[in-house]
Structure formats: C-alpha cells, structure tokens
Amino acid sequence: MGFFLETVIGGLMSGMLYSLVALGFVLIFKASGVFNFAQGAMVLFAALAMARFAEWVPLWTGLQGKLAANLVAFVLAMALMVVVAWLVERLVLGKLVNQEGVTLLMATLGIAYFLDGFGQTLFGSDIYRIDVGLPKEPMFLLESVFEGGVLVGKEDLYAAGIAAALVAALSAFFQFTATGRALRAVADDHQAAQSIGIPLNRIWVVVWSVAGFAALVAGIIWGSKLGVQFSLSLVALKALPVVILGGLTSVPGAIIGGLIIGVGEKLSEVFIGPLLGGGIEIWFGYVLVLFVLLIRPQGLFGERHIDRV
Amino acid sequence: MARSIGEVILSVEGISLSFGGVRALADISFDVREHEIRAIIGPNGAGKSSMLNVINGVYVPQQGRVTLRGRTFSHMEPHEVALAGIARTFQSLALFKGMSVLDNIMTGRNLRMKSGLLAQALRLGPAKREEIEHRRFCEQIIDFLGIQAHRKVPVGRLPYGLQKRVDLGRALAMEPSILLLDEPMAGMNTEEKQDMCRFIFDVNDEFGTTIVLIEHDMGVVMDISDRVVVLDYGRKIGDGPPDVVRTDEEVIRAYLGTSH
Image (cartoon, rainbow over all chains, first blue to last red; front, side, top):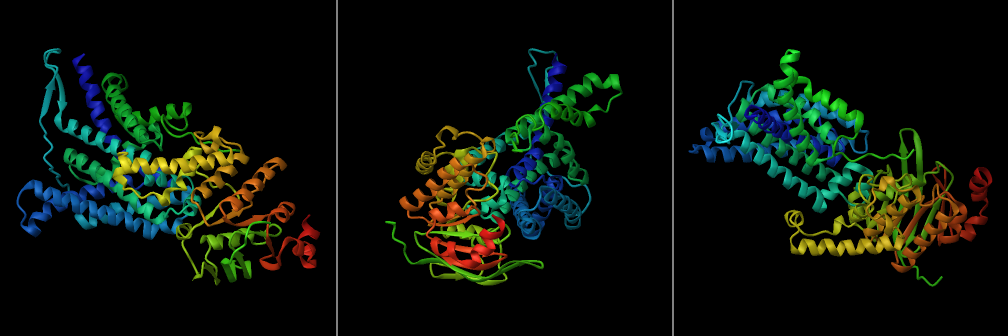
C-alpha cells in the first residue's frame, strides 16, 4: 500500500509539471485560436535564458548572493520573453490576421525551429544548471502508518504549489477581467473582435507574454530538476496529450489532464510494465488520449464546438 | 417624420478599391447625416460590403478618404474606428460562438471598462460596481431585443434569427453614434424581418443613432431609409430619397430590371 501511494504521489508530481507546460498551450489557444507548436521551444528558450543570465549577472555586475542573481536573471529572462512575444506579433502573427487556423499553426512550427536554434546560438548548447534553491532532499510521510513511510520529493511539492497558484491566478484573469473576456473574444473571431474595439496586436503581445511567463516558470522547474539542455524542448511532446485530454480551451483541464496522465503513466509503468516488457511511460498518454477522443472529441473539459450546418 | 436630421457626420470621397485586377469600388462618394437611416443597396457583387469594410477600417482603399466629424483620414485601424464611436454587425455572423449571449454583449462594453486588471480579477469594490453597472446596461439591451430567455446560452446554439439579434446587441452595447449594419435581414423570414426593422427603427428613434444599412432586399430598404445610395459593379449609379431612386431609370435597369 505504501508503495502504491508513493507511485501515485510521484505520478501527481510529474503530472503537475506536465500541466505547467500544457498551460502555455491552453493560454495561447484560448486567446488566439492558435495551437502553438512553439511552446516547447519557448520553455527551452526561457530556461536557457534563465540559466545563462544567472551565470552572467554576477560577472557583469559583481552582484553577490545567489538570490539576488537569480532574481535579476528572472526579470531579464521575462523581459526577453516579452520581446519574443512582441516580435512574434510584429513579424509573424500580425501579418496573418483573419487567416485560417492551419496557416497560423504552420507559422508556429516555424517559430519553434527558429527559437530552438536561436536560443542555442545566443546562450550556447551545453547542459546548464538552474539553481533557484528548490530543496532537493526527499522527505518521508506517514511513517507511522506504513513501514518506511511514503517517499515524496520536496522539490516536487514546491513545484506543485507554484503550478497551483499559477492556475488559480490565470483562471481568475480569464473569467473575471475585461481583458480576459477580450482574449476569449479574439479566439472566437478576429474580425468581430476588432469591430468592437479590441486591438488584436496588443492582445497578442499580452497573451504570448503570459504564455512566455508560463514557459519560464515551467523551464525553471524542469531545468532545476533535469538540467537545461536541448531535450527540454521535447517536454512539449509530453504536454501534448495533456492538453488534448483536458480540452484545449480549459485551464483547469490542463491541470487535471496533467495529473491523470502523470498518475496513469507511473501506475501503468509499475504495475502493467513488467507484463509488457516496460517502456509504457512513453506511449501511455497518447493511447489514453485516443480513447478519450473517441468518447469526448472536445476533451474532458473543453468547450463543445457547435457549428450549424 | 418627426426625427430631425442633422449635419453631415460621415462622408466618403473618391473611394477606389481593387483586389488584384478586380475593381471592387470606383470613385465612390457620398455622405451620411446625423440621425438618418442611410441605405446602400445594389445587386450581388456591387461592392456594398466592401464599402462598409472601408468605413470600418478592414480594407484600405487605394484612393480616397473618409471624413468622420470633420476629421479626415485615409486609413484607420478597425479598433480605432470602434473607439471613434462606430459599431457594426456582420452579414455572415461573426459572433463569439463559445461564449454566452450575455458575455457576447458584454464584450461590447469592454472599451468602457476602466478599472485595473487586478481589481477586476479579485472583484474589488469599484471594479465590481463597474461590472454591475455595465451588466445593467447589457440587460436593458437584452430586454430591448427580447432575448431574455437565452441570456446564458452559448450563442452557437441559438437559431439564426436570434444570433442576428445578438450581433446587433453587441454593437448596441458600444453605445455607438454610428451603426453600420451589413445585411441585417439576410436569410430571415418575413416575421423576423419585421422584428429587425422595428429594432432598427427604435434604435434610430430612441437613441438617435445614425444608421448606415446595407441591404439586398429593396422593399425593406425603401420603407425604412431616409436616403439611398445605389451601387452597381463598384460604381455609384444613384443617390437620393427612396422615391427618387425608385424611379431613376439607370437604377431600374441595373438593379430592378435584371436581378429581380
């Protein structure tokens, strides 16, 4: 029982990390109707910026102390993500107003490759460390109930807390603010949104910046766990089934989808894995999504799309 | 009619617009007076919607200019046009389908919301009051259009005629001084057309909103508009009160004679 719980908790924690990446997808889709293939590249880019700025800032300014260096690096990396958002609007999306979704999708594919390459040109292509002082040591819970207790990584706990806070803030933003309503409006119809006075270009910069922020947070947490390296951009592949499962338009869906896939992966790996020879973790999410799509094409929490014929 | 028609509020001069080799509009000029109902009519492909899109800022004309309340500009961004008090509806509906009727209409109030993001997200006092105030205004529009029962329904689920009303409602929520209507009666049955006519009339009468109306249906237009512009293949072939236009020979030949 203790082992089972440990597996579930481990799954929940890694699921929370998938959710963080998935959140970036959902944000951009919800607010502009674009499925942003560049989200993974943005995570890598943001993490690279964070890792390298944290290294460079003390050299440039002689700043002492890890916390101060990290803070400055965070601000710089965020500023960089805003610049990226602005450039994306200026050079790519702004030219594609009122175009088909597929056109925009292909454009984000281009952005993904560009960011992958440009990030490494700018910041180097080695493996870098992000150390924001997340505690590494594991802790044991419920030692009185089970023999040996349940092992939980503290780092994972912090990550889950941060992700939860982010989600709460974003949900409130979308539901209750006029800007949130404007973002949803833009996603539904560009032309109509313009006609009621919503400036498309500014909205796009805002939403890509927010998605950049989500990417930065995800990049820092993943980066401090695994190190910053090219494979970080592939976490997007892990987040893909999560967004589809949760529904592309739902912020809570991204979180719950992440948790389901995280737990499902770990449980199937541990309990079904030995029967099939292992390696289930890699494809589990996709197979699960396939079944969900058969029953609910809009995902678990997505808005049902109704078209009149 | 008891309404008092005012000064010229909007005028277009020498507008020419082409897409590649296709001439959509050739040297079009006309003006719109305050409080009037001004119709633009013409057969399919005459350039009516293009004209509206030029005023609305969606298309940039190759030549010509638009003057709004004495301010002349060759191009304005669509959201700037909205800021200047011009609202529009769409021929092929462009509603926010996933959002409820109320939310759709509330988006029309977006420009008028002043409180900060944080205050709105946390529903702090002033932001909440502001939201309630705008909500009250939108409820009035919902009452006016007779769609109370559908408030919370996602717009995509409503029948066509009602979606058209929501489209109008969203434009009205902006409290525009000029309202551009792109074929508001297209695809409607007789009863729905009469309802829509009444709404347009009431808006014009009660709020004094100037209305520029594109319509395909001659009968409707002649009944409700003060002055009519007739377009044919991108050229202006008639301009004047309905009675005058109705008897104009070129108009009869181009429009009435052939396509109806």
